[in-house]
Length: 138
Image (cartoon, rainbow, N blue to C red; front, side, top):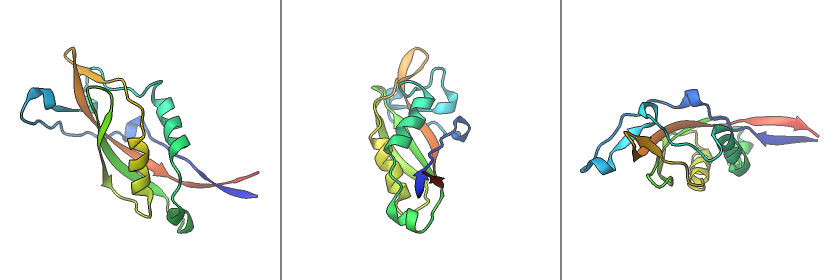
């Protein structure tokens, strides 16, 4: 019997350079992941992040039916307390995949916050989340 399986791949090389943004105060400044002394870390490391995504993403039915595959590019901010905020789709794939990527990132446990010059700071990530249909035999 053939089964449709989801492979979610997020590569460190997929992290894109994100221009740091500033707001009214230095405390609110958002740093780019690639410019960090000590970037935020998912609890347990990047392998655990892959695992978290793989265990929580549900391939949307519409995308399955239409055999939609590809990347949803998303961005989010890791706050000073490690929580995830401002989850946005930067480049869409459609057919329910964009909403699913956002839904799962909003479920993320708190990260270990990033630091710059010895201070905890807000950090923006840009990542691709790959949706791929893979047939396996049982």
